[in-house]
Length: 311
Image 1 (cartoon, rainbow, N blue to C red):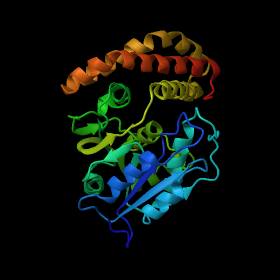
Image 2: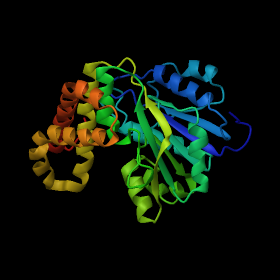
Image 3: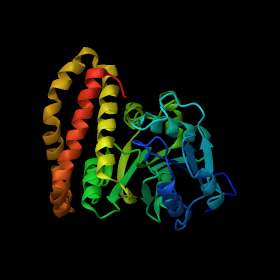
């Protein structure tokens, strides 16, 4: 990977596996960085890892990956220093974006393993009519729990991913033209929310596409059922608390609807899997765990609507 000149591509890797932990580790990050370092025919690329003070193992990775830019974030308004928070992940993306030099910005998480052609394909956005390209996400760990988590997270990004224009793309696996991001810099300068940024870009006439060959594999190796359930609680509560900013007193009406969420989300998830005609047996095997995780999410949403707080 050529780091001797101005990069065409800046890849920002956020440590998102710390949602339920008071301290983060770099076990999954190391695997992700190894995959990025071993890319086939990559463009000039810089890899940026923004991190907070409660991450163990950074110094070891600095030595193992001397070309990676590690950026410590000293001021994160949403970082609590304890488990049960995810809002700081959005702030960390902004920290990474602030130092990125590439014409194309790639977004990944530590719990993703990019395909060996990921960098080469991400940078192709420069010569397309699209300003954002979202990729496919596949499951990388064959266990019932990992399949359940995968389907809850990424069923609509499973291959065969519909190729072409889209109204959405995941910040877990996507690429942006830096010029487009700069046009809405005020929206992500402090915290990068993909739905807000993508909506603003589309309002400006920018276009989003999905690309099935821009592949990352979800690598949640070592995940326990307890951690997975706690994650859903945190994410559901965070999602609802964010929506409360727009809902006002209507949040209580939404709270009343949360009991139907598990079945509604399970139905949507099942439809996504059926459309792909892949992973149907894995989905059926994992379905009891899927319902448990979706129920935890719904409970988190209920808490978020009632308190309008993320923790």
